[in-house]
Each structure stands twice: as structure tokens, then as C-alpha cells.
Image 1 (cartoon, rainbow, N blue to C red):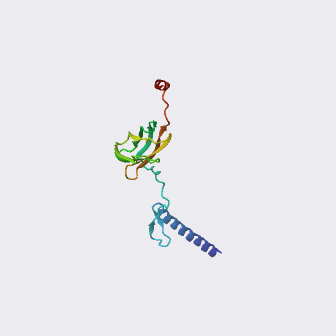
Image 2: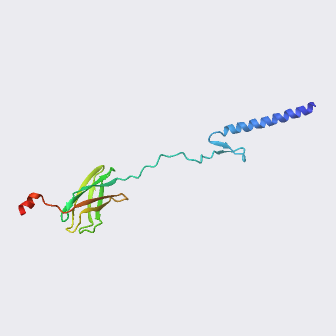
Image 3: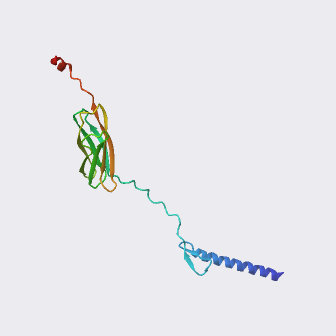
Length: 178
């Protein structure tokens, strides 16, 4: 029985010694190097994390050019209305802008085109005269402005001209004509 007990104790000691040796080798592999079970005497670099850390949020697209309708004079048929359009450059670099003004009523003189230079971080209002034909009826006539500063920087705005109906002269003029 003493022989059996000795064999069991030696076997338990061998298993414990083998485990402690592996634990020591594994302890050396903590960090940048890991234990390679297929080649016990060599250590391999640990594989990097497969999930990259989140980056900064995406920046919004830089749109330096903006445009808005700033108003127009109401006129009677046969008169000229002055339309106003405000161009803005929200970027730091100057912009050379090409613009086109169109309308839906097929009036003569359209489309109207032009260019302007906008300094960085600036706003500029331009005035564009529009001749209203004698044949225009009272109502609202839509205008469309488009602007292009190149490299995909475009802007659009809609506005319009109010054409007034027939103007009745004041009573004093009518009374004087009788």
C-alpha cells in the first residue's frame, strides 16, 4: 500500500509541477506576447483588437455659398421692378460666383446672368432691374436665382414680382378733367 501511495504522490507532484511550469510560461506571455501551444518554445505577438476605436464624428459638408431673395418692388405693367438678392460666403476663402436669374412667364430679357466676387465671411446684396411687359396681368410672377461658385458650391433661391392692377387716378385729377 505504501508503494501505491508513493506512486499517487509522485504523479500528483508531476502534474502540479507541469501545471506550474505552464502557468509561469503563460505569465510571460501576458501583454504584447502570447503563448503559442503549437510551438511551446516560441512566443508570438498578440493579435490586435479587431474593433477599431470610434473616430471623431464626421464634419458637416462645408457649404460656403448661400443665397436668398431680399425683395422686389411692386410695379404696374410696363414699369421696371428692382429685385434684390443676397449672396453670402460662410467660408474663409473668397469666391467668384456666377449667377443666373430666370422666370416662368417668358418675358423678354431672360435669362439674366452675371458674376460677382465675395470675400471670405461676407455678404453682398445685388439689385437686378426687371422690365415688366405692358401685357402683364396683375398678379405674382415667380423668379428663380441660381448661383455657382465652382467645386460643387451652388445655391438657389426663389422670389417674385407683384404686378399691380390698373391704378385709378385720384378724384382731383378726374374732377379737373371734366
